Image 1 (cartoon, one colour):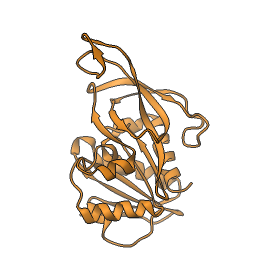
Image 2 (cartoon, helix red, strand yellow):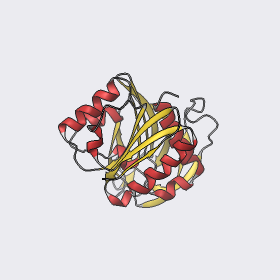
Image 3 (cartoon, rainbow, N blue to C red):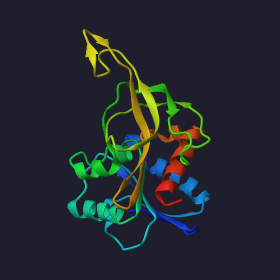
Length: 230
């Protein structure tokens, strides 16, 4: 088990990574940890879900980056109870939106669940829809070349950004006589409450290259900071 601790900052984040390796969980986690450190966070990083049981440390936010896999009942109980009681939760792409496919209460907490992606890696535009929200304020619409997610999404989410899904009749739902009747504005980033805990999610972050886009990195870091109570 790997464990790293950065000893500075006034906000404390627990970061947990693992699962499907093609999402580069270790590299992307350390990239975001570097950004949090620059914003005066104290960060603890684990590569095991047992970190949800190892100690009673108080965290401002839990940042999870664990695609697919399974979580044990006691691990999930710890996680959900912490968030319900006021600890924030944040994550991106499959690391939070495609974790633990057999756990509907976890999916309800996140506010959505990955269903499929209509293509592999392609360019698409991100549209900011709540420009006055502090998480996205000052960010302009931008383009990213990544894996675009189609998700089942909680209608109660406070959606911050969307992307337009379009494609041929084999790629999108809602087709009639072989033609796509409607293009879909799919939520990309949102925030919500789960009990007393703040939850932030962004579907961008398929690989480390996504975070080379300044808007993606800024959106993710701001979302985590908001979840932590900033």
